[in-house]
Length: 381
Image 1: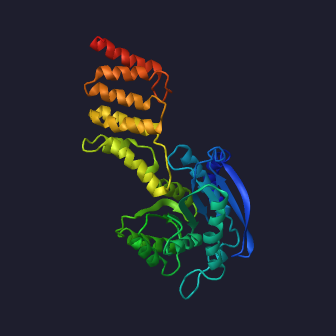
Image 2: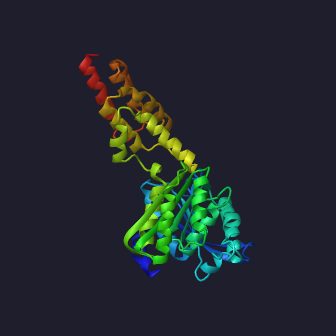
């Protein structure tokens, strides 16, 4: 726990902005009450129509705070979606919770009950009490990391994302993981981490598993592996959590400078189609309907101006009108289309008609009227 204090010192102030709740859940499967820590997204109460992915954190007594802090920080900058984070406290009982049989190496006794508790009781209560989306991630460290992969072995896994922090794997688990990911018919995100100063026996097995997973050829698998330099079994946690979360939501992030230069500026690429497909993928992969960000509209706008592919404005202004009705965004794109495709008089009228619409980005009434006046002056209208 002490090894995580530097990371927590940075992240704990962020948690004051999110909603932290401490709850108990009475489990029939376990025959006892378990303690939970739950972080709800900022403005959860105000966004009554919004649904959120769920992150289940085992070893919640020490892993919850770093995970919750990273989720809150990244979602604040819109690099990942806002999420509900639930930590299960396992202080002093994690070995019982993760017990497996010596013959088949599958959950047994308290371990089997804990497996059913998460799958049948915890997630059901989260779905009932909170506005959850159908995208779930589970995180564990050493023994609990091994445990999370038992859900991956089910015919219809209830988790899509698995974050393995230096797993202490049961016999046969590496082969089982490889087979499950190789044959998965639905999208899975699998993250695996070790470090140069990790426990040697664990590191050896993790490196061997990585060699297997690197060769898995399945379009449904998103796999990321990290071997952190000069980190230990405990300090790797602070490095791995942001790496894993960021990787699982790569497509969710705003269009980067790299994407702009390597994709949008290529004349063989339709920037407007790229933008539409990006947000369609977010909905398909994470079950989230997301409004196209103004920054992403601006990235496509700049690409069109740079490549002079004026026809791209036509689908773009329709998308802008759908996502930001009543603003000047779609009006501006439509005017630019008419201006550059031989209809300056029509463009002038569109610029003038923007008066009274809502400002957005750099677009305001003065700017739009100046554009109209410039056309009027150039063509003598």
